[in-house]
Image 1 (cartoon, rainbow, N blue to C red):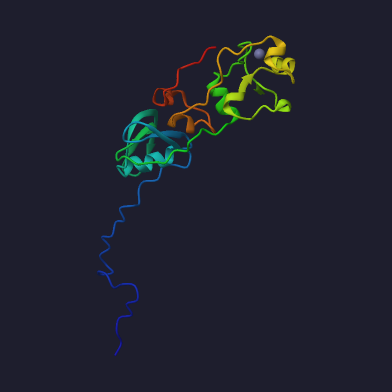
Image 2 (cartoon, rainbow, N blue to C red):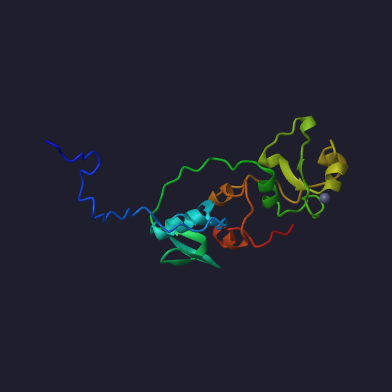
Length: 201
Ligand SMILES: [Zn+2]
């Protein structure tokens, strides 16, 4: 009594595969390496994702493009501008870390890439109260500085040098700052990040 060996064909006829998996989306070319700023439904910056990932979200209608590049991604039946900024269609609640990680890049961004002492181009990080004197590696004691000022200052205090800070170094806050730790900010993201076009001392 041979029966159909139906180990895996329990559902439907083998000949009628109307089983288009909806999760299979046109895949952008691997050359799409740009990054996209992803906003929450409230337009609050969330994170930076690969543009490839953003396109998948847009095609799945989980996000909508807010700002797009001139480049267009061609998939099987769809042409889509590469999103520079995309916004989630549904709000997601994200636990933000209490403090912004202290990084060289974030300090440079906070201080506008300029030396806080002379306004020149910053090339290094300076501890206002030198570490050798108990200064901490914290936002309120770390500033961007040029090589010359950093070298001149060495292990001395501002009082000893007669120098002053234009303003006390502050701890950055806000969701936008979470994004600055590890990557370059696309100028087209700035308006969404609440960052000025350029910071001058
Ligand atoms: Zn300087």
